[in-house]
Each structure stands twice: as C-alpha cells, then as structure tokens.
Image 1 (cartoon, rainbow, N blue to C red):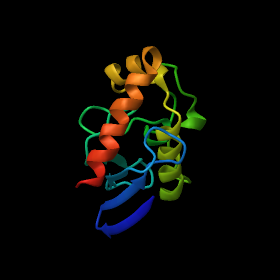
Image 2: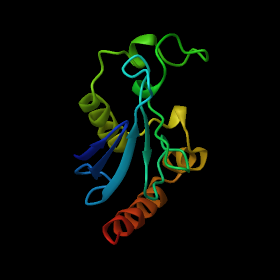
Image 3: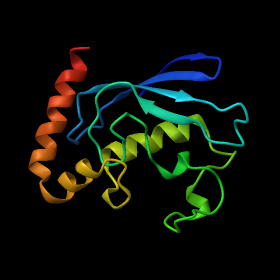
Length: 139
C-alpha cells in the first residue's frame, strides 16, 4: 500500500494486492475521507476502481469494523473494542484493509453476491478477482 497525497480532509492511497491471494499483482486506488470531528469519528474509505469482495459494497465503500462508529454495535455483531476509537491510526486502517483483502469476512457481507460466491464457488471468485487484477493494471 502507498499513501500518495493528503489534501484537506481527503487522502488517496493505492493498495497492492496482497501476496498469495487472488488479488496479488493488482493495484487498487482508494480514498479516505475524514469527517470534521476526526479523530472522534472514523474516516470513510472507498475504492475508486472496480472491486468484487465480500466486505466492499458495489459502490466501492469499505465495510470493516475499524471504520464503524465507536461504541456498541446495535446489531450485536461487533464488540466495541473492534470498532473505531480515536487512538486508531491511518496506518492501522490501511493494514486492516490489507488483511480484509487477504481474508474476507463473508459472515458480515457488504456485497451479498461476493459473499455467496466466496462461500459457495471459490474458484469462480478467484477467476473474477483475476479479471479485476488485470483491469487494475490497465488503468
């Protein structure tokens, strides 16, 4: 991953697909947008390229615990320790997303189709991921 710029409340970064995963070799740009009350509230992250992943909404928004508002999860799925805290760093967010790319959480899917394919047809998921990797290199 590489952080490329910081401009006001918006920061761009690029992720290299994690080694030994179906995303290996890809280059995936993303944006972090910081709210006015940061660091009390978490930033939002969105991939600006096509992504197909259980924890990435079809519009590119990233759904991981560290980016969820602090406090108790109203659905009871996450502990408050897993959610945002003002002591978290941008580096921790970036590393969490690398881990997410390597090990999707299909039980808490932001993309239902990707979650289902990850669980039921891993070979097809890998083929689709490889298409996304090739597309990311032609941008």
